[in-house]
Image: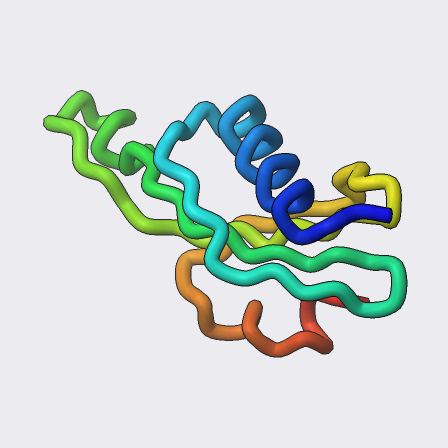
Length: 93
């Protein structure tokens, strides 16, 4: 049986390793049946500015992450705002 602290650690580790951002904060975790749903706030370099070779600026993004009962990441999705990912119907099913 997994607990919320383990879920948080797995989500942070996954995002740090896969999106190469070390500024990751989990802002929401909930369990629905055997599925864990988490939302993380992440600061990443602005890819547009980077592509134009302009000075770097951090942008705030959000990731909705879904884990199974074994804490395996089953999906993740990037969002520009919290709008829409706070609705459980949109990222649980």
